Each structure stands twice: as C-alpha cells, then as structure tokens.
Length: 315
Image (cartoon, rainbow, N blue to C red; front, side):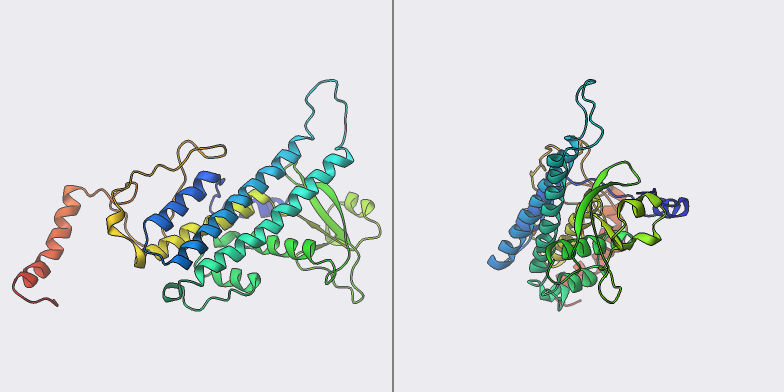
C-alpha cells in the first residue's frame, strides 16, 4: 500500500507516543490489582482472567512477528523474491489468531469493570462495540481510538463470514515496509462494503486496482503492536480507579519486582496519571516526601488533629 499522506503523518506525530508492551507490563498491573486492593472472589477471578487474556494477546502478537521473520533471507544464496504459500498462510493464521484473542481480551476487560459497579456505574458489557465506546470516556491514549475501532471491525469481518460480505485474503506491504494480512471482496447487492474497509477505487495506488480487478473493497489488518498497547494500557486507567476505593494500606511496603523478560524494556514502563494532580514524589508504591512537603501536609492537618484530641471526632 502507499504510505500515508504527508499531512496525515504530521498529524500522527502530534499524538501521544505509544510504547511497546511485553509480559512484564501485564505482570505489574496484575500484581498491583490483586495484591494491593481488597477484592472479593469473583472480582479476583475476573482480574486473573483479564491478565491471562492479555498475556495470550502478547503471545499472538509475537507469533505474527515470528511469521514475518520467516520471509527474511538468511543466506546470500537465498534468492526468493516473495514468501512461499506456506509462509503466507502462516502470517494470515497468526493474524487471525491475534484478532480472535483481541476480542476475548476486550470481553475480559468488560468482565472486570462490570464487577465494580460502585466505581464505574452501569457498564454495557454484553457488546464489545458498546463497551469500547463506553471505555473511551475514561481511557488513556483515546486520541488513537480509531485503531481499536478498526481492530474490532477487522475481527468482526474475519470471524462472521455468514453475516458479512464474502472475502478472500492476501498479503500487502504497508507504508512502513511490513507485510500485513489483507481481506478483499465484492460489494453487497446494495453496494455496501464492510465497516472499516476501504473502497479500492479510493486508494491512491493503481497497483492495488490492477491486483484486485473483481473486488470493490480491501481491509488491511491494523498494526497489531499498536492494538495491543492501546488495549493493555487501559489496565492503568482501570486499576488505578479501583485502587482509589480498594487500596490495602497493609500491603505496603512491597518488595515485588516486575519481571524483565523477552520484550520488556530495561528501564521499565511508564505509568500515567488518570486525572489532573500534582506529583510530589516517586517510588514503587508510595510517594517519597521531601521535608518541605511533609511540613506542608502537617500544617494542613494540624487543626484537625487538634480538634480530634479535644474530643471533636467529626471536624
């Protein structure tokens, strides 16, 4: 496919920068959610299921990357010009597995949130489409939300052939030089095309039209790394809100060290604030206060402490 227009790239550069997620990110937030909050048994099990779903999504992301690596020549004598049919099938299968797993992970998020009604209120958990629209109101990186919508649409198309237009699949090179799975097919009887698909006539590449002369639309799989990050980072948005009400003070200090495995950065992961506030320190679980900060807090609390000492228990 053609690279994105220059103005689109400039717009993308103004959006918050994403980061790559590895298993250590999931492990950190699972520990934070389960070991530092008061949860009942069903809440705990729902949280564990979410962690397992996201871990599976990480593995499927890695499987797509491994499938792409089979295309890379390993010898100067390897004169292949394109992936073999087996290699192409491997990338398509890995992509399909990822997006089926994506759907399960979104459902697992909804399964967690609906069990904290006192925190999140009524949550539309029976439809992933409606849940994602609800989640955007509290989500991090919502500027990139079209990527998750595209992921939802791609999964719906690839997993519901009976209720959608028939399609075939192939591989296409994106603007960054990576091969991606692509679905393509004819329009419906009324001229409609699947949600999220692109009319081939609207593409800038005449090569695409020549390759797909009998088709009306194409749908290139969204970038799986971006999809994974945009979904996994919502752990930050969800768990921190739970912790406001459910934090266990007796769970700190904590000596837990997030694992640093394959795919995890040496310098750790960013943690984002879920609302406006002032950072007064840093630390693994609790802030480190400067003497000035502590004096300011003591001065604010002093009148209330004195009232309690004088017998006024409700200052």
